[in-house]
Structures are given as C-alpha cells and as structure tokens.
Image 1: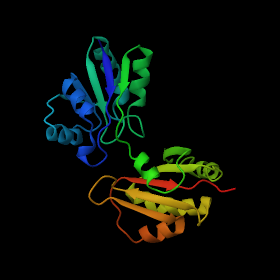
Image 2: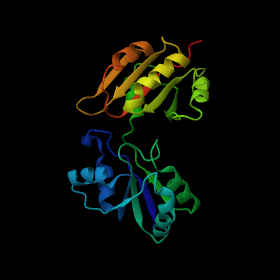
Image 3: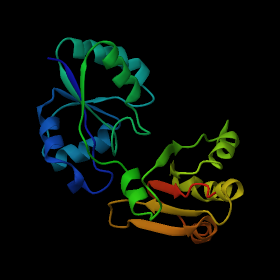
Image 4: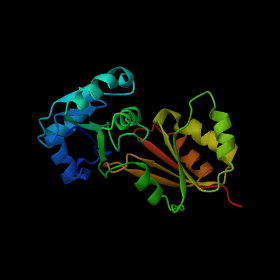
Amino acid sequence: MSKLYLVPTPIGNLEDITIRAIKILKEVSVILAEDTRKTGILLRHFEIETRMFSHHQFNEHKTLTQIINRLQTGEIMALVTDAGTPGISDPGFLLIRECLKFNIKIECLPGATAFVPAIVNSGLPCDRFLFEGFLPVKKGRQTKLKILSEIDVTMIFYESPHRLVKTLEQFIEYFGSERQASVSRELTKIYEENQRGTLTEILNYYKDKTVKGEIVIIVEGKQS
C-alpha cells in the first residue's frame, strides 16, 4: 500500500534522530531528500543504504507528478529535509497537499524542529506564540513588520546569518528598542549560543561579530 512518511532529521546533533526514524528510513523504497549530499552524511552515519531522489524547492514542481505516479503504484517513500521537520520553512507542503488530493496515506513522525528549543529556552512566554518563519526579503517586508508590531504574543522568526544585524535593526525600528528577545544559533551543536536581552542589547552583541549557522529569533509580544 502506497504511503509517504514525513521524517524529521536532526537540526545539528545526529544523536537527536529517533529510533523509529532510522527504522523507517531503512525500510522505505526511496528517500526524497532536499540535498542528497547532506542527507547522505546522515545515512552513512546510521548505515542506511536506501537510495535517494532529489526533491527541493527548485525542482518540486517538476518532480511532483513523477513522485505521485510512483506512489500510486504502491511505493512507500520518506520525505526529509536538510534539518528538522519537512514542511516547516522547508519543502514538503506541495507534495503533502498532492498526496491528500490523490488519497495517498501520509504519516508524520514527531521529531526535531529548531523553533521549539529556541522558544522554550528564551525565557519568554510560550503558552501562545506566532511562528512567522522567514520574513519577506523585500516586497511586503515593511507592511508585515507593521502588522507584527501590534501582535501581543511571542513571535518566532528564522533568519540567515548575513541578515541578522539588519533584521535586528528593523525590529528595533518597528517593535521598539526595549522589546525583550532571544537569538539562538547553532542549536544542539558544539557551539550552540543563546543570547537574551533587549533588542538593543542583542544588536550590540552581534553587530561587530561574524555570525555563522542557522538562527532563530524569539521576540516578545507587544505589552499592553
């Protein structure tokens, strides 16, 4: 019976993969990988010999029909991204929607995602939050920031290292310099860093530094 497994992979530390995820990746007929080179490192580490098929944001529209056709013939596949859970600021949504359209069974395994440890260890309220992911780079960015400046729950953003300082400067402009925040970098890795404080304090910390690694920014909601 055809089936697509959505398999979270570690965001840094390879030991964070689940026993079940390893089992599924060994059993499926093919692994749909965002980057076969990065996934290959994971597979070799756990001695997983399942073949891979490239499926990423630049080819997902082209490969979609081929994958659906193969699933309809009874294949069982697993979808993975470079790190974390497929579909969370990563490829996956289009394939998931198409599988549902054709009544292909989907099963999502629980597992790693960067924003959960980032918001929990930020010290900011996490009973309610808004996951915004990556902000628009250009078009619509200012409009989005104006809207977010009125949000009264904790907000979660993903950002690239080379845009971190600019984004913090914009957050100060729209949210205010004293808004509490946290920047998490290289989560679960050797050089994990969690910098907490006001937006101004965090900006001053990072503005003269060379920053590397995946980044999660947690920002306090507007206080009444």
